[in-house]
Image 1 (cartoon, rainbow, N blue to C red):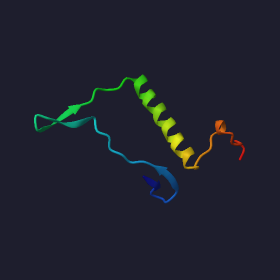
Image 2 (cartoon, helix red, strand yellow):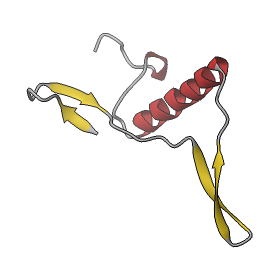
Image 3 (cartoon, rainbow, N blue to C red):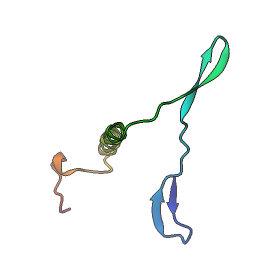
Image 4 (cartoon, rainbow, N blue to C red):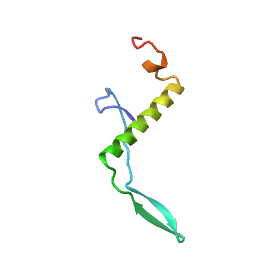
Amino acid sequence: MQRTSSDLRLKPHLHLVALAGACHEQRAELTWQALGQLKTSEVGEVLERAVRRIEKHLRRRGLVRLADDGADPGR
């Protein structure tokens, strides 16, 4: 995670590497298994699930309160 841009302004963002497959053991050898490509609808489902899990984690830690948590959105 990087918190600032090159000019030191606050700009939190992530740098990451994502693999298009995984290694698994097959007959005592490591084998690369490529993953198939996701459909657009599947990407949306993954994103929605990730957002829900991140929100749940942040609420548990008290870092964010959503309007449906009974919080006053004006505060």
